[in-house]
Length: 77
Image 1 (cartoon, rainbow, N blue to C red):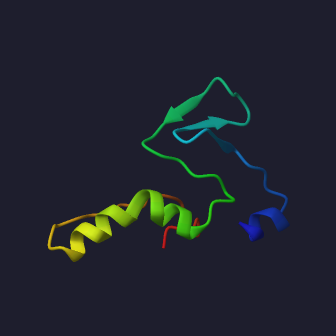
Image 2: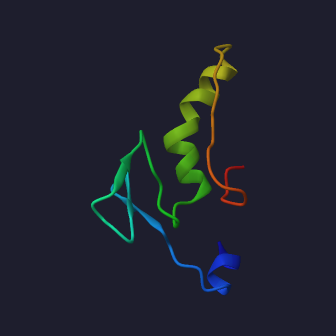
């Protein structure tokens, strides 16, 4: 976040491709997810990849849930 950058905070994890995040301190440590997004990813890109099909289904009467996980102020909204 801009606040963290102003405070001199460093990035602890980075996206390694579309499905893995790795530790800056130890690149051998990584976690795999269905999809990860880099800090430069726009809200529209996240929506198109991760939510659009769920929203379209809901508009047709199919139940859907989108679960966003992340720390406070990380842009989940």
